[in-house]
Image (cartoon, rainbow, N blue to C red):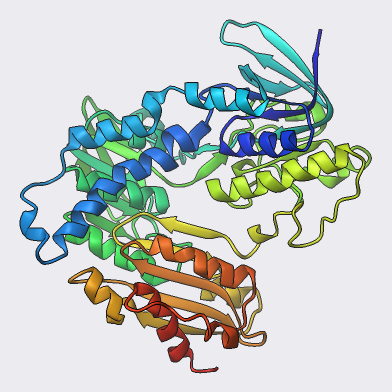
Length: 476
């Protein structure tokens, strides 16, 4: 006999947890289905372990860059201790704490692989082959996330490459890690494993961090090279071959690189294979397009809005914090519609994820850190916005000289010239991730440049770069 709930959530990562939590708080009876660990990719194989690997190196660099402190540094990182700290951060891959939280929140859990079996019906297959049938009285939310994309490079799949999962959960430092891809995952893992003593070669078809302003990737590439990494930009990979414990990568310029492990970090693919989307008229294996309330395919749901897709799986903004933001809106709108309300789904309401379109914040925890929100200059111009920009060398801010003996960084604002508001901001430098929220508020709140002159930065902090950027702009 089928078990009945108001809402079935497929996927118990941070996104699914938040959909369920926000809906439950508004009276929705909810069950969540998970095939792996409750807490999902971010908790065990992405955000948390990667930052646990990166933080010790950043702390050591911070000490080495300050006179008086650097004299106390007598050695490098203790790789064994760093990996042990990483394991503690992910609770030794035990999800008991997350399960206890679900119970405390009043959310039921069913373990197993879920598949849709027609509208509002989900079949869950457990590890022992047993099946549980769930029926939703109101809605199903797909929160299955994304997986590493392995491109069709000759021999790559057969070479058993690392993906982001192996790169963040490895139990030993590889002798020589070859990284294919220059995005956030590739750049962060190149940074982490270089810090931990591996020889690292990073190969990127374009530049590094190409979703940000060009100077971000350029500064990170310079720092990686200074740390001993071999960074090859504008280079593609044509073949990968593994022989025993060695792997050889052939580049499109004819050169070869031999290492012990190869990490593929070239993008993501939706986790929708085997999800049963065909049973509800959708394509198995594809991304799930949604509106701003996370409702899937309005034509399919016009008479009975029941299927939602939240987080990476909808391909709007593949970031944990954006998925959680979407989840808050989805949980609330599901509850409102279940009650028969007519929620306001216009821009910037509690029921919509408006920020996904042009106000997405992101931090690459590289050396130096790179943080951005909103549109790059190129993206804004392509969108038809008449823009002006302001840039400043962050090392010239008084706070930077106190913070670090040889601070390296740059900041840039992209300003809508007609509305006189910031539509994009990028900061590169030590610990700039903690500066990003101010820029995010300015972008989301559409704070006029004239008003920003009255947001006085404390002296001497690196945030004084805001004043220098406004002075460089010189329009108010």
